[in-house]
Length: 144
Image (cartoon, helix red, strand yellow):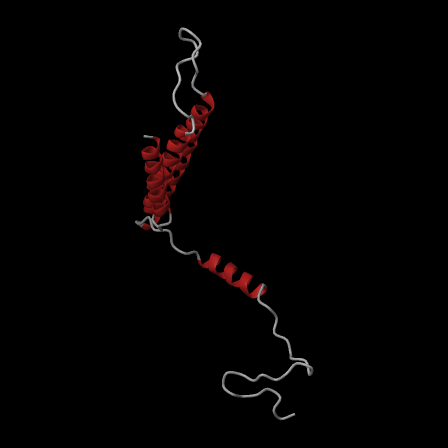
């Protein structure tokens, strides 16, 4: 039974990741929800079985409260993230009548500037280096 639940958690996490990689905010909201449900299922499986309540009858093996606390915390955090993403999707729908996230021109300019800043500098060949020519068959320094 545990293997079936673990496989279910893996499939739900994979679907959530797939939906999260899209450009639509509505898909991102559903993806975050599915991903969090998969992770919550894994947290629940990490409790290693069930126990009885610690205040009932004889002291049998009790349930570990730490995974349950993690699960409740994850549910609250996911609720906040989903509420924020729904707000962003609604705002995007009001402004553009669409929920597709477009490329930002400023982001492209910054990325291009970073590439040119880290590009290797062009240098003149030394006289000790052999002339290998170019792909056209043109040999540098053939007139020397």
